[in-house]
Image (cartoon, rainbow over all chains, first blue to last red; front, side, top):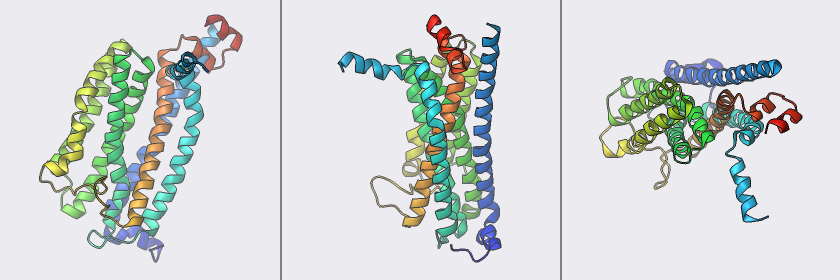
Length: 55
Length: 258
């Protein structure tokens, strides 16, 4: 552990805006994309299951 | 086992009926590996690696910037490869995989540009320059966007696959241009951090963190692309017996329709 305190960590030696701006957007993209593909997969499964019911 | 039967076994994986459940089984493993490696890589990179002597803590963007940039190029090559296979051998699943890769590749390209801008501002004093590395990476984003727009604009799926394959193959010329741009042209962008020809130009702990994050992104890409490929395969083959089986049609009915 190289940081003395939590505020030290968040400040990133004065580059906090840049470092966290990069990390937050990356984390958001990589959190949202799996949700979107899971929803797409679930939607097509549900549609297919409904079709099977009608058959 | 005869040669014929082993060849048949291999071809089985080109069938959506085999791919669908197999990919479904692999997804949780790739997701778990991605989470573990990302946690490990972030712990090393954000909590253990020392502050850089020249760039201060701004350099920590490298742990997501380089993996995102590598994935953006790797995924493009893999996409073009499967699109070409799908076209040349009329292999539908290969085309489905190519289409499943494109959105994830585009996302990593955007992230490479975004994190690069946020790294460029404190170190170069500018968010953006029109130099070879940045411009060719931006062209990569346009190639992904063009591929996605093209395949979604053509209604007939196999025609869309072929048109997309042509665009993907022609566009793959851009990938070596991105990779070697820092060698071929004068640029603000630094040279390769890691190359097969030379010793790494960074401390061991920084390199470890960057490689762990790369493997985490790679596993993430596998997980997301497999889920998307399963969804696309179902969307396309919704009338096929394997698709019915995948959503719980009884085996007897499946047997009857096969």
